[in-house]
Length: 201
Image (cartoon, rainbow, N blue to C red):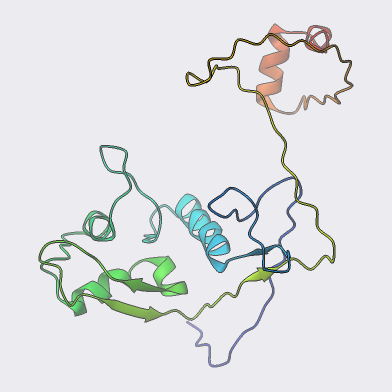
């Protein structure tokens, strides 16, 4: 196995069109005080973790949302106890915890801040500095327009007592493409002809 003795630098370019790559808690793109759109390093790290989890199922990924039987996210201590074999954060010493954390691919890449809370969990805070460090990303375009598309739900909001029946007449041209090399499309065209599909419009 080759040993890396020098630093490596790189650049990740992300193009986001009609999408929101890294929303804030209000659902809007994150912006600096001057209005420049930016993204945190956490967004890119999530995509790496998601890729590892899906493409390499045998690899452990620690910092990833998991749900318990009640469909609630695990706490940090619960995630540790459930991911690693025979692990118990209340009983494991720091050396064992570090060994377990370093068995996860994302921790070996990006490091970890491990500060669990709960009963019998004291003096278990650990900080690991990973070899791969990612900075915040800033929009390189001088102008950027933020807009949102409002869509109508087919369901009524139970808290809305308004009984409206507004109708509008419009004629829209919507481009349609059917990939006949797709198995799903072939199954679809077995039951519906292209002409019947186009009648929708």
